[in-house]
Length: 485
Image (cartoon, rainbow, N blue to C red; front, top):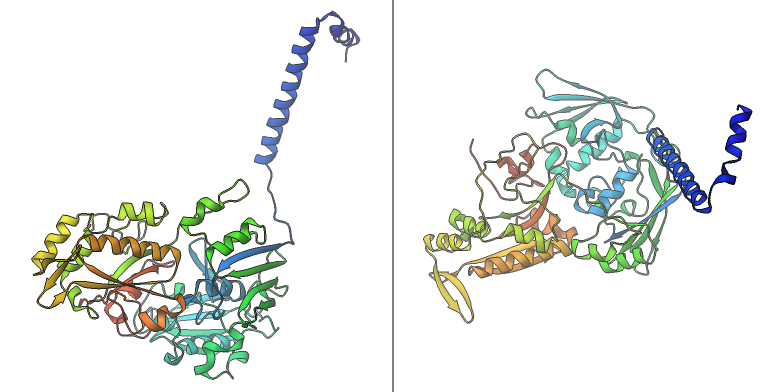
């Protein structure tokens, strides 16, 4: 630096007043702070933050595991979540796209009926036994056995599987089905463990709970039970032999709680790091500066499915229209769901192929609902303080069934109140989640079923609305919709 300039700068403090020195110091500090702020923003913009290996995450879940087995898991949300950590399928959903998982290649025949899948040779189970085509064939054929009542039965019904060699299988369909690979995301079972288990005992086998073995990124390290032998927690350890990039976490601990309040208390007391889900009625309680609520948009919808075979009163379309028109959906979302929902009028979700925004809607109109019931030949009567509808000796009555959870119970009570306001007698039926498939869906034992339908990665409504899915075991055409075309 030029010596004359340096001397001039040096004498500045001597010629400034006290106030001028304060102002100059403040300006200098602000300038430095601005430079630091801009510098940090530049660093953040041009930096890539990488995850660090190690650590343990503790999650809470309400309920308990029933069968950590890909063949049964979809019937229980907890089982389904853990199964995805322990098992791999031929394909998987990655960012809403179906991509290979255990599969390494796929060939489709010209007639679109045969799908030949190549399997990777470096996938090994947690007990270090290699996965082969035999395991894939065993898993599919077991799921197709009607005796075990697998949730995959309807999906795989009529599909033929054949082993070509140790690393190749071929699926043959009865008719073309373009999204077929999206159905092959279920986990693969180890044949060497399960082939000795009698098929009728498979659902209750110890290997479902205490020693589930797959090929996934995590494996069971230990578990704890209560005095009744019910699982209290699992510790999952990183699978060091995983054929893909191992996860960053060393461990995941999953603790199970009997109800939402107990789980939320555990979160507030820092016994867990996170909760699998928080019912809308509890969200205000857990919202603090130290907690973060993440809302997920799911490819599923909840609806009420009418079974006119079970309740002949519902066979008249005017009654079904009346029930639909008597529900204030806007109020339902705001009150029963605390705003956590979007109103839809079609099983084809917005953004999916086939979505029609002009589909027939049934807006809230209780007067129109009562008019429709009267047109169907029912006469309004008084029963004490309430009104009802009578035709001959019959009273218009609908059983409303749902699974036992805070949110579905809240929705059921809301719908019950709205239907009773127009004079429809409602009989609520609340069942445990684990009994839904066996006790309700399979025997079609319901008048009206309030339930969520998981559309999955492909919008094809075949499984939920095709006529063939009414009688087939495991079929989920819950409305028993029939169309000869």
